[in-house]
Image (tube, rainbow, N blue to C red; front, side):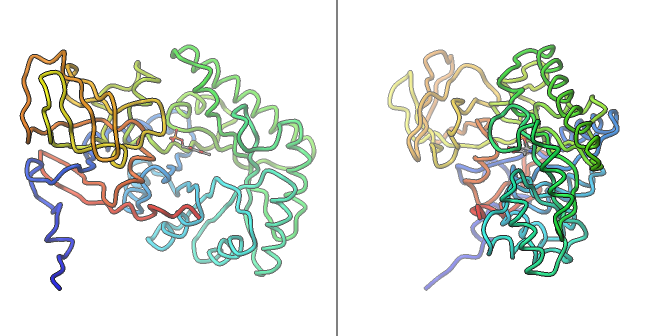
Length: 378
Ligand SMILES: Cc1ncc(COP(=O)(O)O)c(C=O)c1O
């Protein structure tokens, strides 16, 4: 049996973009680094820490790059598998912004304690606090816990009015250290559609966070950290004095969702994650088909892929390996074999579909990042 090495199969460092097999997920390195520096400047201006959320790219080398460029000490993860992947690959300050439920998963968390410099997880109920304390006792370790407060997303998080009692329970729990609150503010994205509305809604959310902190501290528990924000909201929420740390994930890349949500801030040039596709069929002059469908672009949100460098064609429909492109407004004609590049609709879930993210500079492959925690949903 003949096998190919990864190097023989490509993409390879130095390979020109024109030679890459498609569909292929790309990241424009210079523009990506520019985006990272922009958020680093926001964090510096408002004197908050920037802890990047690696759920977006799931790669420890990119996490280290983010830390280098932002001065960030550590990362956020959304699954225990991501935490393990980061820890195994040299990231030693990790916050898991998710509740760990179940004995064996909690034992995995405890196993990591002491193997990294700093580790914290999330609680938002009496049940999760008790499970954490039991796990700390079972494994003879100490676990840092951040209390998630529901700021209005109605996902997870204790109700603000119940936060002081639960914070007290965390502080009192044997083997558990109260590390502050997570005040994730993504509901703002559903409330705001202009810059002024973002400013107003984010400030109102952070006022609520401030009152939660005041109530917890009035009950006698110190709140050392207030963690907030994703890519869209953190640059607004960071302005509020209550915030100590922002946790954006998509910010190196952006995507069609961010482009549509904040057109005053995000342009096509800021969208650095794209998929290069090849035209595989031109059935008629108003339509062509590319080799990227729903197994290449995640279509978990209403957005479709958007052409990176042109506005005269539209990605209108997808099946698994086919993308339907409406070319009725295009002056140009297209041929089988032409290449078309699209901004990804939702970057986190799209990267999760691929083994590799290909870093591009000057029209050639300049870096290769394995999507290391891909599939690590546990
Ligand atoms: C708790 C938490 N923090 C931060 C983020 C990162 O947000 P974004 O993907 O908007 O950058 C997420 C994303 O889902 C999240 O759930």
